[in-house]
Length: 350
Image 1 (cartoon, rainbow, N blue to C red):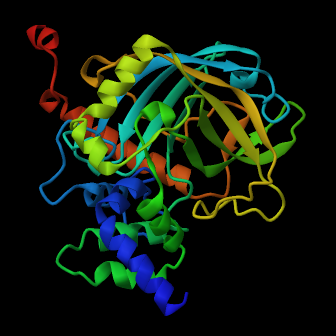
Image 2: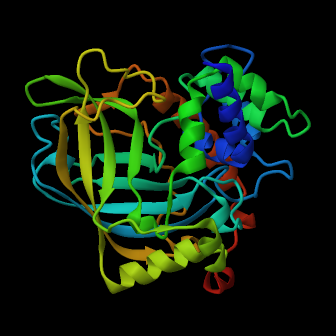
């Protein structure tokens, strides 16, 4: 990378230091099996905490969120790709969560760059599909090892050179820095495109396999707003807005599955696939009801990306399995702290 480009990229990193930890944590991994004795799932989850420590009882990242329920209506177009029942024509119940990539459940919405959505889809055959997506078009780094280095570097507030050293040794982060520094904000969770950055393998009834990625494309047109405008709307405007919007009318997204071609990087989520790749609309996600998390059905769900139905499996991308291990640690910790999680008055009286 040219020196001038490196300096420009570093400037973006300094601006989005907090974003790096939050966005990357959306795909938290464990490298214990890659480097025995150096990194474990608990060690990684510890690294996600802010200097003041984790918010006990909450998810260790994406701590601020709101539940929803709805349906996924499959149109049958996914059947040639996967034998999973979720792609057969029909309507399937969904439990989900809109969220912000932050370990702080009380954060001001306008200060968080990365937004996410998590889904749990159930089918009559008793299987589940769990997935978590974010509005970032590509992951900051190429490998799990680099991800952990990024978390460590972004947490070194006492060392202003830490991110500069990281950037110089991981040039792939330039694309993420450019996105975080220039991509427009929308005014609603409903207006976001959510990307599943990891690659998976779909297997159809004939045994044919395809490497794929997926994304949710909003029906609501995006309305771009400034950070100043968002701040003026209040610290919790995203949850308030999506609640009001869904109460007025269901919100919808198309589920688009993109099929890889020979040579596409299936193990590197920092690289987007060419826009010319075949993309298939396999159905519509509809959000019908929004519920505050303390009373919501998503509160105790672990949106483990390795929970997949028959006809879907992980690829050579190392992140899904690694995220699964870290998610498990986070889930076990927060559930063991359940008494510290804020409850409604009704629950406290039980």
